[in-house]
Length: 110
Length: 121
Image (cartoon, rainbow over all chains, first blue to last red; front, side, top):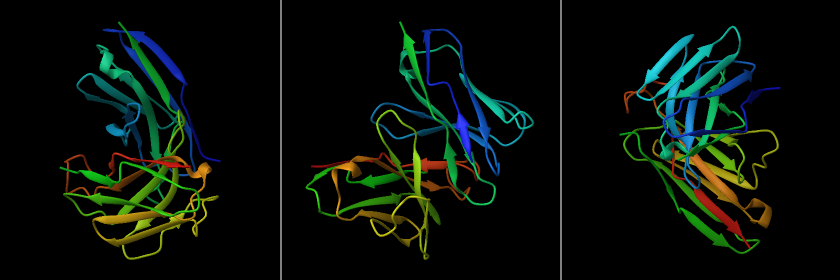
């Protein structure tokens, strides 16, 4: 079967750095994406990794290791507004379907 | 750019009625749109892939006769929940896949609508 596993919850303080891991097992792979979702809202795109390595976008960075079927989202200089759920997602290479991870709820404390 | 709208944002209906949800890509054409359902504190579950001008592809376990999808144009897909029951109450989210012409984020970005919260009494 296809699955993407993430930690269910992570807690950190303002200004800290947090890493959210994602391990995946899928029949096809076309890249790993990360989305942020605040309570009651829709997911918003954060980053996308098609190749191994680190992609940096402001305070957020995302890493991918295809050989390990593993990626992570790194959030630096945490702010209260970063409190949200974060989902990794893999696009199936045969179709354009996206499979979402279990989601990680990040709580940022003052 | 790359804005997706959904209407309505919230709907409350009686059991047995049908509800139509619209998903529009406002500033780009989307040959493919996706419909997801999300229960509280859970992940997004893909229901179906909607392709313009052809029948939708439903995920295993999703009743195509209950969740009718129509993608009549390159900017509009609709999901109709027929004979809704309380267990259909959920957050329904659509997304549209960029063809790479909008947003500058490449060809593998989904843009999500704001979602529709359906409550069936």
